[in-house]
Every structure is written in C-alpha cells, then in structure tokens.
Amino acid sequence: MRPVLATSPQAHVPCRFCGECLQPCLQVPSPLCPLCRLPFDPKKVDKAAHVEKQLSSYKAPCRGCHKKVTLAKMRVHISSCLKVQEQMANCPKFVPVVPTSQPIPSNIPNRSTFACPYCGARNLDQQELVKHCVESHRSDPHRVVCPICSAMPWGDPSYKSANFLQHLLHRHKFSYDTFVDYSIDEEAAFQAALALSLSEN
Image (tube, rainbow, N blue to C red; front, side):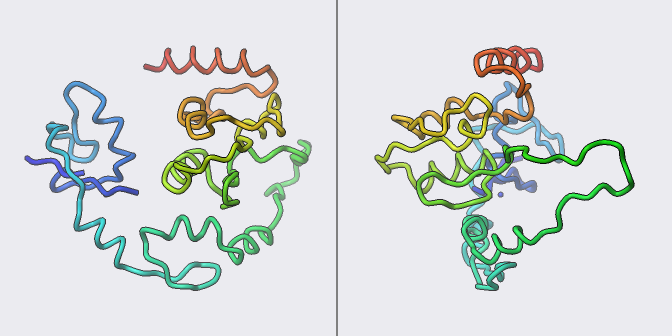
C-alpha cells in the first residue's frame, strides 16, 4: 500500500491526514496508519495534491463578513476578520449552569490565544501562531515581544526577542497549559515541563 500524505494535505492511500497530524506517526521506527492501523513506509508518504488543489479552489463564506474565501486561506482570514472579532467580543459571559459557591473566574489572563506581534492577526492558538509566523513573517527583521511569554506570570511585556522565529520554534513547541504550574517561576516551570514530557515518552 502506497502512503500519501490532508494545513498540508497528506495521504496514505486510502487514508488522508493533515500533514501536521501525521508527523508524530513518522517519528517511530515502524509507523502504522492512525486510521486503518496498516504499516506504511514514511519515504513513500506524499502530499495529497488533489486535496490541496480542492482546498485552494473551493470557496466558502466567512462566518463574520460573509466574504467568500478559499478553504486554504479561511483560517488566516478568520483570524484577522473584524466582524468575527466583534462576534467573539459579543459572546455571552461565563455564567455557572447551576448556582455554586465557587467564585466566578475574573482577571485571569488569556493564555489560550494570541495576537501576531508582526501583523496583529488575532485569536491564534500557540500552534497557529507558530505556523502563521513561519509562513507569513519568516523574513521580517523586526524585533518583537513574544505574546506567549508576555502572558506568563514571569513574562516581561517589554522584552523583544532578537530572533523571534527561532524563539517560537525552540520554546513553544508544546502548550504551557499542558505542563505548567503558573504559581512557580519560569525556570522551575521549564524544568517541570521537561521532566513530565520525558516521563511520558
């Protein structure tokens, strides 16, 4: 069976995956298809060009401004669409389903989504921010503040990275929420995250 790699559609015939999702399977010595569980040769995994072509040719309306955008560009469009931002700003506030003695969360910084420090594209989660910056700002020479670090208790909102893309790729490959106790300092948090990550492999 010839694998084909469906962000960059990838396919393992007859199975198709997002290229990013298939990457962990390619890191093991004898990979199995996550869907059909059949073994496949990573060297024979290819881009699903026909799926990529469909994503670039099919258009759908943005849920905010209703402008028709190709599916391949929809995520980037939505992240910068003012109408979508307005809709999100007008979403109902958190209210407990039933009465509770627990206090309603307040003044908790948003550590789930971030704005691009280069172009201001909003509501990018950590992986989307890394992907967006690598694809759209690879050659931008400006020094910028890392929005992920500045949202952390130990972050310095005025510190500008000398090489922001390298910083993103080295320090933000995993989500802090998965591993970090925000009540401890950065070095302790980093060490704890490494230890937990290693224990899971």
